[in-house]
Length: 448
Picture (spheres, rainbow, N blue to C red):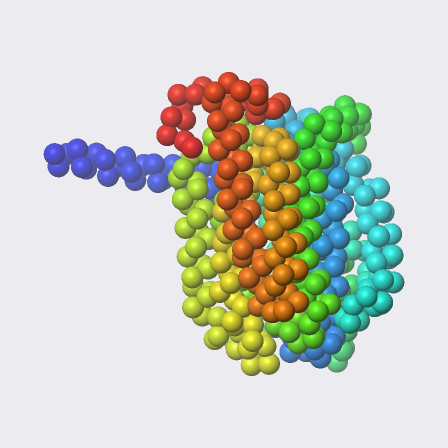
């Protein structure tokens, strides 16, 4: 009996060692560490700017950045998810050509994004009380790093090079924070235009350096570009429509709140969101690192679901309990109202991280219609909840709307995942790669 227990314990230790030695876990740990670093740098940035700028200038910068992030999600067009799947399934030589096709396709996307930001800059001051139009005009054609962020992440997922993406992200943000520390020290006053310009320049420099490091090959791109277009037609554009609908309405809370509240309320909401953001990082990192593996698996191991849930719930509880001292330490008492919003937004971030795992599985199998269906549900719940809660309850209403909408989104993603697995296991219609890549059923007898 004792020897059996000892053998089981030894086997358990061996499984743990193998898990931590796997490329997936190393990639996830590195990505989570870099994401946590980025979250810390984001809080440092927010604290520096909140202390160094007046409320109106700080609000102008944060609103301008949120508008750029919001706009960037529209400039993917379903082309780069197929590229990620192609990269995950290609040989090394072909991967360089696919990377070249990614860069080639992004060039016209970048020009279109710059023109769009320039046009939006003239509309902002007319429709919102936040004065961000001049800052947006300054950065219009240098802000292409915002949509390029998602493109680089997709490429890194497909290549299994999340560590390269992570290094580029951290170095870029370190440079930005270093500049923010240096400028006031030499007597330069921080303005919303100057800070937004520096932010955009460092972001763009980081992604350009990453793409150069990936060594794209630009010869004979026709086949790779044709495959990307075909993938966009088959499932990429459906996933893109779903992503735009869901993320667009998810981030509309900041735009609605900026229009419906005073600058201080908006600033407090953004402070609470910044404190809550790191909650999702460990779980989301693990989900992101699993992309390549999930392209070759018909189901998820329940252990991954448990791991992502625990990795998200624990930091959410910690941040919620420490909300008041964290706000006082990072943002000062001027923004103390943010502490009441942190538990809601932290729980929303944890829910989002768990959803990311199911979303990654559906994306890895090219199940665009399932992603679109889940996104339409999130869109409807976001619209209804934002319109119902923000006008009357402002920042608290926006926080509750985010939490409730993301809970609905998690439930729908889980249901679509179960439906996709059922189709695969019963021999029903499974699209494209999800059907072709199905391994032996017996190997995953314990999976979902």
